[in-house]
Image (cartoon, rainbow, N blue to C red):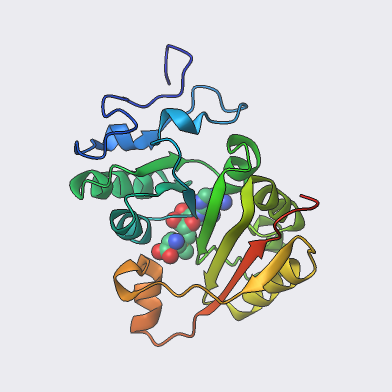
Length: 222
Ligand SMILES: C[S@@+](CC[C@H](N)C(=O)[O-])C[C@H]1O[C@@H](n2cnc3c(N)ncnc32)[C@H](O)[C@@H]1O
């Protein structure tokens, strides 16, 4: 926890410096205040689109994509400390200076810590499906989560979802289809080198992967 009252980040890189290799502790964002939106301009180079990987796990996709797109900023969110640490270590080793990581419940982060509209794309790869009916309330996707996505996306911002769980896919698609703010787009399929850890497992098992992508209408109700 920062003692200065500012969100913790070493900052020694300078947000504009892509040249200096970051340290894992530079990559993690630790909010000083959990009830105020994060001041992302403190962590990222200014004026670049922000992409967010929700439930980023060990960060394989996030870091591979960030390295290919140094002109974009990338935020990974995951609630598991072990995975965030692994992702931060990987980002540091690979010199991904445009990546930041936040350990947080992702629905909370999107609803309360991201003050929109600043996100150009969300990637939500293999969210926990919680298949038992009594556990459905734990699922990430709900009408309320779509509200938070819509409020934080820039006009025409995109949401990309992938899951191996057919019933959860149908649930997610139905939520988007019923929401007039979003329109269907060609589903995003990551190139092989950007596959997430779970995607690699499912591809190896020949498990079908269901994907959908939506974009936020350019104007109108959020
Ligand atoms: C099935 S794994 C998928 C990880 C990664 N996206 C991939 O495809 O390899 C789900 C990830 O989401 C994280 N997660 C699940 N529910 C979450 C939540 N409510 N908030 C933040 N992270 C969550 C888990 O810790 C885990 O890393």
